[in-house]
Image 1 (cartoon, rainbow, N blue to C red):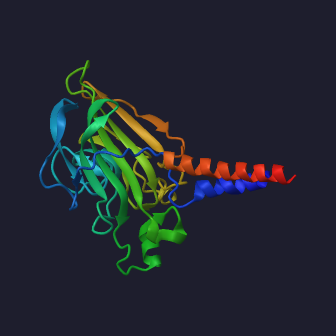
Image 2 (image 1 turned 90 degrees about the vertical axis):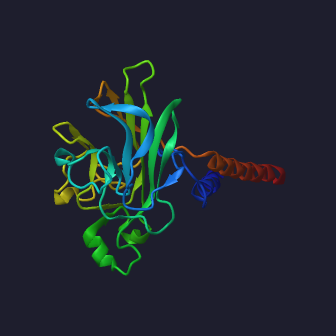
Length: 275
C-alpha cells in the first residue's frame, strides 16, 4: 500500500503541467523588447538615486542587463564596465528572434510599492536551430543538460522597487530573481557597476576554464532558485541579501496531489470492503 501511495503521489508531482513556485514573479510584461536593446530611454515610473545621480529612465538590453547611459550591448566585467549597469545575467549571444516574447518589461508593484521590472524568460541562444552542429554548440556554450541542449533556456528577472517613502529621496531596491540557467556562454557577468571603482560581481570575472558554466543549474555557482536583493540608500548599494526560494507546488499542482490522495483513499476503502 505504501508503495502504491508513492506511485500515485509521484505521478501527480511529475504530470505534465505540474508547476512550482519560483523566484520570477508574473508581472512587468506590458511591453516586448523586439531588438537587441531599446533605442530610446524607458520611463521607470519614479526617480532613483544611484551613487549621487538621479535617474527616472533606463535602457533595456536583450542580453540580460539594463543601463542608465545609453542603449547598447553590454560587454565585459563589472570591474571594467563602460556603463552604469544592473546585470542579472549579462550574456552575449542571447537570441530573441525565435520563440515569442522572451524579453518583456513594464511597471507594476512589488511588496506594495511602485516598481519596474524586466523579464528574460525562456531566452534562447544564438546558433540554436540554425544548422549549427551539436559539437559546434558545445564548444561555444555549456549546458545544464548536455543531452538536451536544444531545449536549453534561461529565465531570470530584474525588479527595481521604489523605497523613497519614509526614506531619503531616490532610495530603492533592485532584485535579481532566477528560475533556471540552462545555458551559459563564455564571458557571462552577473552584478552591477557604477562605471567606476564602485561595482559588484558574483563570482568575479569567470575566465577560468574550471568555472566556465559555473552559473548553470547544478553548477558551483548555480543561480536557480536564488534571489539577490540589493538595497540602495542615499545612493550607495549595500551587499546583497540572498534568499533561496523553496520548491513549493503551485495551486494547480496541489489539486493534482489532492486528486492523487483521493485515488489512494478510494483504493484503501475498496480494500477494506473486500476484506
